[in-house]
Length: 383
Image 1 (cartoon, rainbow, N blue to C red):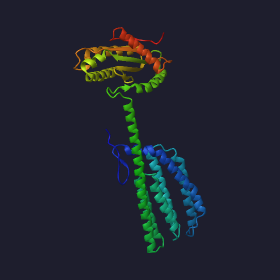
Image 2: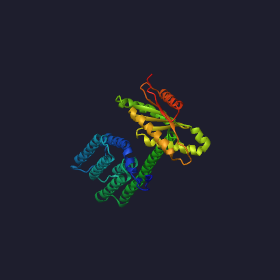
Image 3: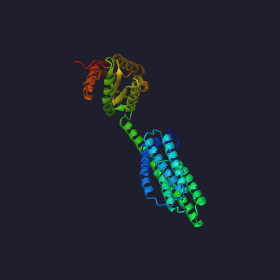
């Protein structure tokens, strides 16, 4: 049984097995949409920001340079918007988003050189971007941390080396970037941990639902499928049989009933009767094909569905079960006499319903019982 994934404390990723890779691929559409919306917001906001930008720019060629820098940022965003919607794998998504953000940061850093010493608005803009990148969760925490720390270090270096700020102001800038990364990391951990907890809970509930469904569709004693499963499988089998029918093969329903089973219970006890039912189920399952199914309807009554099966194969399988049943005594030590079974075999016709075909198979079974048991009767369904 595979180990259950665990969320690591700091990086908030799923450890053990392939849980993290499966999680990332599952959330890819959601992350792709979020990255698209954030990028679209930048494309809309940046021209507005440029028109209302009153930051003091250095004289000379810096104004055209700043204009080119911002137009390049918008161009990168437009290319990103065009590509992101067609990304199918998480590794491609990760490369695209990481490289786009890196280029965006580089252009921000180049643009910051053009400003004079009035630097407050740029720092505020930087802090908002850093915190949003962590909190949005569009990148794993490790990649967000690497990009934001890189940008913060470069931005602090530009401030300390190229801007004429007082020591107090320089300390404030360093603290601002440090604080934004600290808050961003905490928000990022909370976001990624919450997303993975939700993923694990959803999959745990799904697995529990499948287990409960399997239990509801299985007989508790023999582990054979039950009547409820038969009702659900029948229509699916019938549709599949109609698609693949070639004129010779068909869907066959076989009703089976262990002969004199009440005597086994009365004379040897219900424990032995239970052993007989379990062994009988195992015998049938060993003789049918992988695409066939055996169902326990209750007591000693069983039903077998054989898909895409020639008539002679269906009959041959029943004869083989009858022979093994008689010879082996099902391997139950308490039995000192052979166990026999009667069968009713019928094809599932196009006009059949669940009830009609079961009634026809039961009629064939009762005929086999009335004829002396330990035999089968074939009912073609054609009057």
